[in-house]
Image 1 (tube, rainbow, N blue to C red):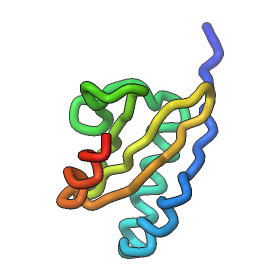
Image 2 (cartoon, one colour):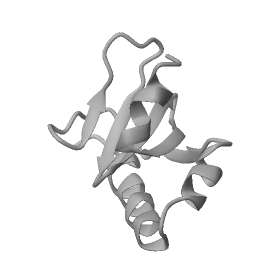
Image 3 (cartoon, rainbow, N blue to C red):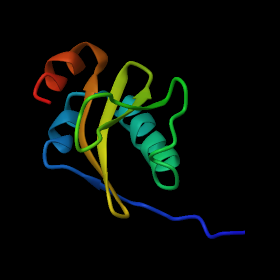
Image 4 (cartoon, one colour):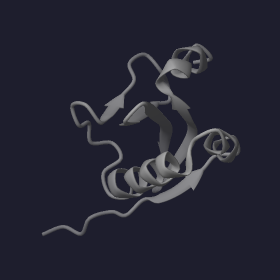
Length: 97
């Protein structure tokens, strides 16, 4: 059986600011999901949880955690979280891509 790759998770420069606007309970939930889902299989699309966004190069992924979305890229063996946003703010942020 092949060894499973473990990805290093990095929070981008704006993520700390994003987290400040989120309740502590939701912060814990979001960060726990990031660790659980993205540490071993960040590219595996899970119907309602992880999605690769179409038409964006290099690939951009979204992790859904309740009403929040974590947007990230996979660079070698690193997962770089670019933003954590409420779903209502996601569309405006995504227009930059």
